[in-house]
Amino acid sequence: GKRARAGALVNLPDHEVRGSRTPLHLATINGSVAICQMLLRRGADHRALDECGVNPLHTACANGHYRVVELLLAHADADASEKSGLYPTVAWKKMYVNQPNAHNGDTPLHVACRSGYSYAATALLKYVKAKVSFPSKVSADSVDAFIHAKNRDGRTAKDLAIFNRLQDAEIALSNLERTLVRMRTGKRREVEKGWSTMIDPNPPNKHSFSLG
Image (cartoon, rainbow, N blue to C red; front, top):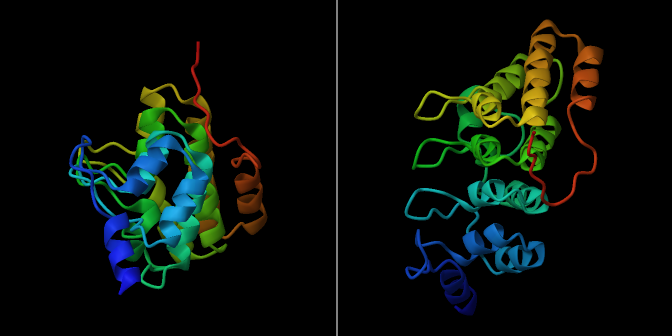
């Protein structure tokens, strides 16, 4: 029907554009929340891959668009075909928020730290915070899989944050590692304190940091 045809068109990659990206890829690069919303309503595939195996969440993180990152994660949660909620470590590795690209194995968190956008990293961390409950071994394993995921070079997101001198992302990830230790020891109050010192409550849509 018309809806199926519209869905096919909205996911049609543009082979004239480098990487054969879909309209949603291009909208996430530009950072337009309204256009992303319109495309998603019309059936755009949030997991669509370009020729480098990069999905729209990766491109949103690469360009520091905090609100677009939030939108994509919320859309994934509402998608019946997506796994949502709390899952063991193996399943967590396959979740949208932690999906590696096919190019170099970077997860969205790697991409945000590689590109120099702390606020994109913050959006991912806020999502993870909302997903897990404390104290719980499954929660701890899931957070561990998220922050310690390694790309094909064997680097974690924190490694990239340090390399790129992304100081606030490095601090946030260091705090999260300490929070992970508290999670494993069941210290709920200390865990909640660790989260509260890690998350910027209201960052702008896009921001990069240049340390002198």
